[in-house]
Length: 169
Length: 105
Image (cartoon, rainbow over all chains, first blue to last red):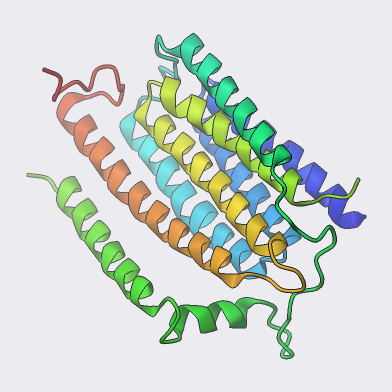
């Protein structure tokens, strides 16, 4: 029951902050509401037994991406003009609403074949939750070790690319 | 009615569509990037919900692994995207997507 209450609170705050990101005119406040939305998504991960992902969400999204966005807003001095809409405002609203309706209908009408009350996940005896299993799956030879290495190379390429693009000529 | 898979999926759809609407309609490129982050977060919620609910008595760990990769790609995308925006701002003194029409024929 407590988990249900937590879900509803987090869902309302998350949707509200997402709406605020889109409709606030002040870019800086929109970015702060985006950070609030990242926090609520971390809370939703906790209600889904994904404790490691909640920590990753707070560290990377709130800590890195949020700060990066705030710095970008401060550097580009466009905050005074605010975040305006372009002329696609109404057609995009119709299209997004239609997409939302289709998605909600599909997701509620599909029989996913799930247990209503899934059992407790196979937690590690050391009390580390699912983190140990994530590590095993990431680093085992028949797991995701090749995509992991590729992701590392991609991060290096992204960092180098960002430096090259930003450098004064 | 207790919270189940559909609740999480509907929440993910709502956040995704809000981000989609913002990404289509905003003029400030930094705000467009923020809306894309919203869409990625919505997809992550759906992935984690599937990884918990789709199997009985266990957690399908590959859903959470996919979320980690999505987070990595999103971080790289934010870094490169903001670098491009700042390079554009340095050259053209604007971050308005309507004014950035360098490659328009």
